Image (cartoon, rainbow, N blue to C red; front, side, top):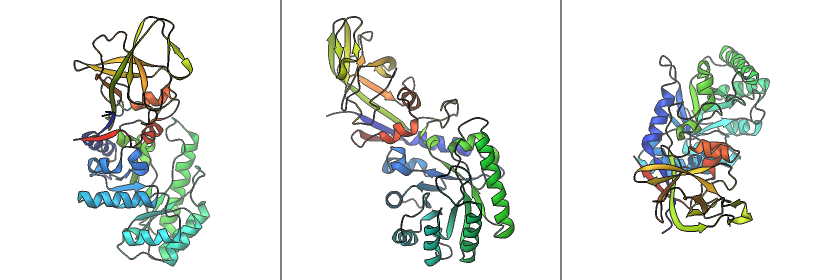
Amino acid sequence: MRNTSIIINHAALAHNLNAIKNTLNPHHPAKVLAMVKADAYGHGIAHTLLGLKDADAFGVACMSEALAVQSTCNALGMKKPIILIEGVFSEVEWLIALEHGFGCVIHGKEQLEFAIKHPASQGSLTNTIWLKYNTGMNRLGFDKQGAIDAAKALHKNGYQLILTSHFACADEPNSLITDKQITLFKELLDTLCNTVDDKIQASLCNSAGIISQPNCHYDWVRTGIMLYGSSPFAHITADELGLKPAMTLTTSVMAIQRLNKGDTVSYGALWAAKRSSRIGIISCGYGDGYPRVVAGAWVGVVVDGQVIRTPIVGRVAMDIMMIDLTDIATADIGTSIVLWGMKDAPSIDEIAACAGTIGYEVMCRTTTRPHRVVTF
């Protein structure tokens, strides 16, 4: 049996959630909206939620995700608010949100009309609207006057409000764009509290904002990438943030090839042996979610309980890749390989850097082909 596996560590998820909570103001701790969109950032909703059971709510991007999260919560005996962070995409979806009690972001006129036409009952989770204000990301959200008008209409129809916005550059130190967004957000929040409802709540910080903007945690923080043990910053590692990897990608050596000096390996013959070499063929490739194009990437070879570093050679294929075992004489067919996520092996952020991307994308690229295993 092909033995490429993704190991999901519930203890790591719980640790990361607790590490995030420990950064919050102890005198007025914000609630934590745990982002589990995109199948829990590639980890798998069914394999992840129990590790995040101490979150205050779960955030998703669309209705199918909301229903999947609710189904999993029900199976686990958990009851958590579920928030559609992009809101609904049709009037029919609004009615489904009402039926299931999902919380919703409202970021545009059509969604506002659905909410006014079909009001949520008092006490329903859908009765609390996350009102999206565009402070400069320029993707979703009302402008200032539109947000004021929407807040007044929603309040008149009995809705509770959480003003929300999204940082564009919270991962960049000393960003003037972030400073401007904070100023705009504070000004509108003050206006709404003074003119609409003094009980309006607020949510501004994503993972990067939680760390870089501790004075802006407000009532809710929204965290995704840090839950899974990856850093939202290019200049700060996950280790430095006190995070643990929630996902470990492993496989094993399936064959050994012996190359003479000058021999090449894999598609395009991009790599040639500079000496007589012993090449391990391992059963993982871009069909499993490993990046096809990586420069300087390496794996951890597990020998006698130790993780030994060795480089990937040649082009990564759909199902397999090649590693240099010339200097690891005891490694053979069946030897365990860690591609990311274990102590002394590469971190997912390091592999992302080798692929010219970010940890978020590498996580979300993982496919359903690797066998998923949960550890506690």
